[in-house]
Image (cartoon, rainbow, N blue to C red):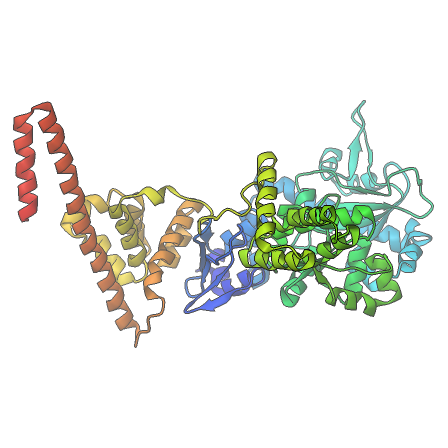
Amino acid sequence: MNSPIEEIKSKLSLVDLVGAYVRLQKMGSRFKAPCPFHNEKTPSFMVDEERQIWHCFGCNKGGDAFAFLMEIEGIDFREALKVLADRTGVELPKYSRTQDSGVKNRSFEILELATKFYEKQLWDGAGKKASLPYLRDRGLSDEYIGNFRLGFAPDGWRNVLDFLVGRGYAAEEIEKTGLTIRKEEGNTYYDRFRSRIMFPIMDILGRVIGYSARIAPGGDESQAKYINTPETGLYHKSHVLYGIQRAKQPMKQSDFALMVEGNMDVIAAHQAGIGNTVAVSGTALTGEQLSMIKRYTENLKLFFDMDGAGQIAARRSTEIALEKGFTVSIVSILQGKDAADIAKEDPELLRTAVTASVPAPQYFLEKALVAHDKHLPEGKRKIAHEYLNLIRFVSHDIDRAFWIRKLSEALDVEEITLLSVLNKVVGEQSSSSPQSGVFSEKNTSETRSAQSFEKRSDFLRRQVCGVMMLEASVWERLATDTPEALTSFLTQDPLFQILCEKGKQVNFIFDALLTMLSESHLQQEITRLYFEGGKILEGTRFADDEEKKVYIGRIADQYLSELAKELRKEEMIRLERAMKEAQERGDKIESQRLRAQFSALLTS
């Protein structure tokens, strides 16, 4: 009888799972995409549909469906198992929880119950009188108020605390979710959110992890208009986006994300039919948030307030997004209203404005041209300095050259002069900022491994490992009948030993080997070797499986032959060095012995 893990894998399409997060492109029998786990220009992330495995040659991460979900969602194995079991309809046996996962699950349960409590208070409790009408007056429909699970925290010090304690949760664990505050003196607690409209913040799976809370109509206006959940075990403000749980698929389908400033703007935009809208929560846009968006699209539209603070935020967000490789554009409305107000008055105007967004470099160039007189030398300098300080973040050379040409045309200044100014700007920034080297050429691989300095024999041994896993019969032959001259060298490698020993236990079936290995680093390394070995099949067509089997066997034998020659070459180099050292020491006996070995090797 299959285990739940094997049953899930048999029912799950890894291509569909990964394709929900990144745009996969068919390449022969495999799929490729830019890696969702690190920034790269050339796609090095590969998915093998037949084997149900993935690997990135840039950051060296890889594995099966469970490894992918754990990495991209930041969840543990038990959570990934539950998500994929629910997805495939596989029933799981009851597992005992670890302490950490138990605490985490309790926190999710507490926040889910609290959200239901707040929802009830909005629709049928204290929030029904003023807060619900306020939301409707802002243009939100009951449907979207419900979709985003808005609620109301009534006035009082122990409303949600008493509710949750009554459901069997301890005051100490409730505090860890950010719902309550512990008094400095004594062991007593009180509600953090009081007389506020509650906007639940959810993770990408739709689980409540925190709240953004707005002062309710008639509330104490001396208090902060919005307060958010503090940093907790679940909520990290730099890693969350309001609305992401509903926006992720529309982002992928439309191939762009709309970033707005407020929670109300997000809901209003979704209600207006722009479902790919998100907002940050209590922080400026961060690299972590952009990495989350980049799983679905590399195109970002910013719709921030037209006031000074909003434009500063738009500029900084543009810089960090350009540096992350995004194509950025700006949505602007002459009336200066926010998305929620426009969506209420004229949803079509909002949709039109988003469609008519302007590339961010063009938008900020036009603003600089308005702010300074381009006909005066001083004005030209200010425009160039402001604009080039933005363009330095553009990560693509062709894009950067295009926008420098636009600046050249606008100022009537030669491009070579502007390039000189740009180099000066970059130099100034590099001396004072850790973001120096924005324009330096990077290696195609983000991380240089020690393998860059390995001997060719080590490289060939890895190739043998990769190729042998492509075909069970070849794998079995090399595991049980390794050429005697190579046995010692091959078996020095722990991975080769694992492939031989574990391979026998799983009948040389690759998928079964991955399932057997519990160490994630071994799974990743073996997956990487498998993908490297599989490159020999790219662009090659076979009449049948037998032809493919013969081809793989022939390639494996070629690698073994090359390895034997390389080992012989390395041994000759070693003997030459040893003879030289013996001669320098004046050790004639040792020198003669080594020379005899060298001669024997030459004639063998």
